[in-house]
Length: 220
Image (spheres, rainbow, N blue to C red):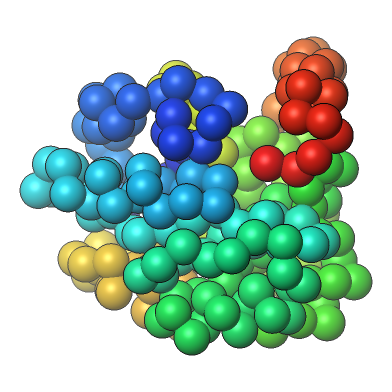
């Protein structure tokens, strides 16, 4: 079964994507599960879980801004405080019943990098991200192999048409969010997707710099 485990809504503050658009696109693509991973808030994820069509599994999730970079927290029951160190953030995620996944490891603005990931207790690595460069995704997959950690994939979509550009493939015997989490921990997933080409990377870089300056040079 196909899942996109990294999707943002208007609750992230850097886009206007509505749940209705997300649900329509997931149906068109035949996705069976999603992770709504807004920046530092569970609001979008909880709303998605309440209003999703019955055939779509929604994993409660949030993209946490740690002191060193972004961490995806899946299956958590509450917001995870931002700005803490990586080790402390992972501990809080685990205490909340969730798993900690290193998001887009090699992204310039918000990736954690190999050294931080290898020296902390991550449960998995986001090896493929739709907004990464193709080289960044290649390195992400090699890092997951080096760390002997499971892989996840997600589009990091801020617009509906980007949903599905990177995916996590789960066994077909997964029927609940808990089944999906167990499959990740058991290493029963694989990933699909490519990443951004050179032209899109240049547009993305310009847009990211503009947004970063607009935020007063602060991470989301």
